[in-house]
Figure 1 (cartoon, rainbow, N blue to C red):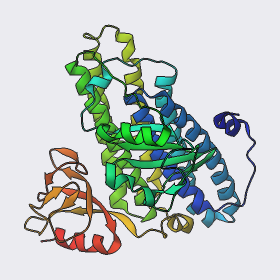
Figure 2 (cartoon, helix red, strand yellow; figure 1 turned 180 degrees about the vertical axis):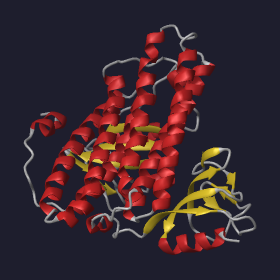
Figure 3 (tube, one colour; figure 1 turned 90 degrees about the horizontal axis):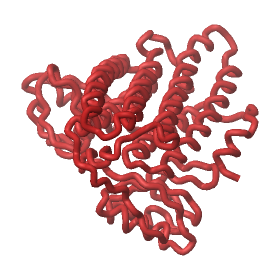
Figure 4 (cartoon, rainbow, N blue to C red; figure 1 turned 120 degrees about the horizontal axis):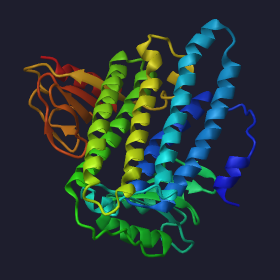
Length: 401
């Protein structure tokens, strides 16, 4: 039986599960769904799109279980007030899941995608593929640490599906087993060899010989930027709730405004491209893609709504991140500070600090995503960075003059 069909039809009954664990899994699932759905459409990979629908069904189950547990947890008006924002987080995660499913259906239901779309993808976009581990693969029955795949090839195992069970954050101790469905991300130059070793079959990347259309290329660049900003908004939204940070919640709003503006620009590029493509109807899927991306950024705002309204969130949310020391922080760079003029290389600032810079909001220039590019930090920049609590405190001190 198809795992997707089985999970969709199975009745959902209350189980005494940890609300903390469900919230963590919903967060991880939402983030993976965004990644998978866009990769499926941009690389025209139907196998990935089908995995999105499986994950969407899994999210529906998680949402119901979370709502059951939260309803049982509300014993008085104070509990209800604190749990209301948590219900918002659960609902927003489901909105993200539905939007990702809609993106996958652009491909699966053949709503329309231009043949030149693959040609328009920037070279920097990594490939994400789905492969089934063969019984005689040299990776089978070994841990990721033993394989040492990422350091040798740059290819990462971002998730595994074992039957209907998902391993969303595989680590060094995670063991790959025969018949696992593995999701791999990495550079085109290495993916083929890793895929062959994993599955025993050749990977055939999609090719497009259609000439590049300038307006379509601009549209693809814009939708990729929208996708990255929406992912950042979701990440910041969860962090704003988990660390009760109104500053991070405000940045989520700023990102949502930016995505709205980009969507308008994106639609203009798509409409202009219609004059140059052979079949303008093939652009319908791109319009759907822009709409779904905007839904994801809206859902991020809903996640942080409780923080913006100054509602104390139930302690169960805080428990969801106590297992990790890594946090996201927001700092404003003062003129003459140590970080003013520091160079960022691959996300790491040229300063005595171990924080990784995710993004910069620069007055007059908007958002700059810097994880995979170089940039200079300037006075008045708003920096979003990730690292340990100790490093975050040091980072904040370096931003002050």
